[in-house]
Amino acid sequence: SRDPIRTVDSLVHELIHNALGEHDKTNNAIEKLQKEHQNLHQGTYIHILVHSIHELLFLQNNQTERLEKDKAAARGEAYTQSWKIVQEKGAKNILQDYLEN
Image 1 (cartoon, rainbow, N blue to C red):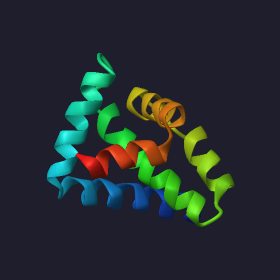
Image 2 (cartoon, one colour):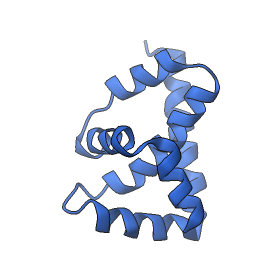
Image 3 (tube, rainbow, N blue to C red):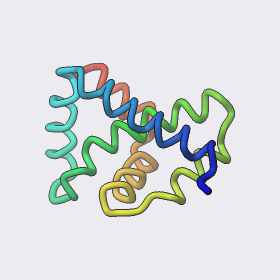
């Protein structure tokens, strides 16, 4: 059976998607990310934002191990590419750009 903690982490991921979908800033941020990082899988751009928020939630709650498990569980181009960019740019920097849009 599936680990209940992983289930919670997946639900949080989906809640972040829903919250981002309600803001005009999201489309502006995605357009900016598309210019900065061209020719990536289309789903990568939104996941850069989702993973940045999720990473900060993990870290605020001293859940480094859960963060690493979440990264390790990433399957598919959009997920792996987005985690790579979050690691390169930094979650806080990505979200600062998002808030300034």
